Image 1 (cartoon, rainbow, N blue to C red):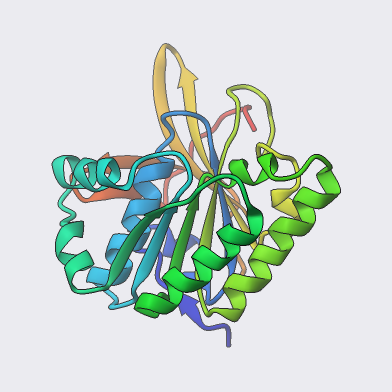
Image 2: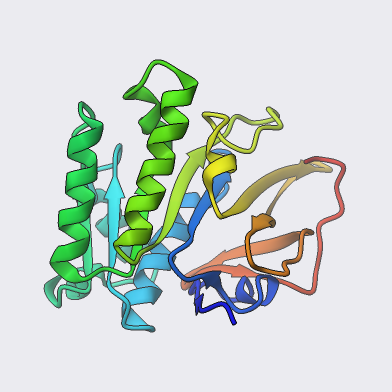
Length: 232
């Protein structure tokens, strides 16, 4: 039996046999506006508040204070209380050394005994190296590190509208244990958000594109409904 980690996203666990495989590395990809940040905040918040699993949100672009304020103003997520209880940590990283990034992750995870980790966005890792092989090796090294630390990890990747890509760097999907794609599809003049489980190791998963809704409590997935579209 594979030990599962509840995602904290209603409806998603129904598509992946009950949750993410424990200590797995999940690539979360999507275009702008698809809901990637909301998904990650929800994963960390519900992990700590509902399942008592501490989490670290490592942001490489956005200021932690802005993420915390955004979560409080738009959703029912009081991260300040969880931070005070040492159940959640938000941290920004300097973008000049991959080794320092590794050290920061290790220290932050150890500080609160984190079981969940978000790296947003993982695209920044491509700035550390010139060659694709080096980027792939660094992501693999990072994946091995967080597994050793006992973290279920989400790597966030931004993809261009209409590109047909799964990730920004073109290597993350080969290293990740699972891939979730958030779609923002325009049909008949209207935008529809959807979620697709592209890959999930050790898991019998659904592969359809399912509609999602963003509510005051975060993202809700409708596992019994599908979006029928020719778009990938």
